[in-house]
Length: 273
Ligand SMILES: [Zn+2]
Image (cartoon, rainbow, N blue to C red; front, side):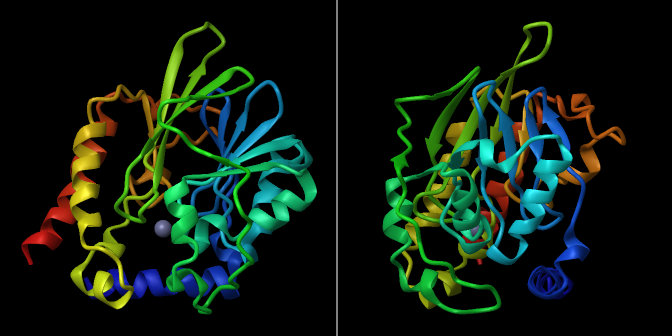
């Protein structure tokens, strides 16, 4: 456990002081979805056929990596119309302001995490710059799928990692018309679900129970391609092809339920301590 903690510390230090060490080239995860994050935090670009959508934005200091990866794919950040946020933690929302300033994109978040944004936890200055919180333009609703160009995205509120963590189910199609559902759990880090963490940050311990229940409930959703909000969760970098445009090694309809089982077990282990 100690080695993991040290490792996480090193990643954070790199993110703020030597971000180029975390940089990675973009790659496809499905016919119209691309990984544009770094080796620490995930971010995904969706070519909807009617502009771009971006899921998550890294920390403020590393946002330049998003711009670079988007350009490398042949797209332009100006064409981002919607930013969908998995949850309101600094490593996912820090780049919102720079992306909005070039694109004018609408920002989407859950109502629960808009409230959470006001929590003192989110205002604490730490290793990374705390940017001014931008009030969302739109809120997710599990009952109303987002229709963005040719892409339909269903959302599922899954409290746990934060009160308003949101998962996405992206319906994509390949060139032969085959439907591929891409599943992204919005936050599986159990670092925020220990009794100590709840106490120190004045958070409701019910979040851990809700996380476990959410994982169980979402297992029945059919997902062809499972992608994480941090690449280390679900071992993303070891599942991809050496050809960055070949997403096919990621197609595995059993991976989603397996991933949720593994992550729920981490939370259950905390319950038993
Ligand atoms: Zn988080």
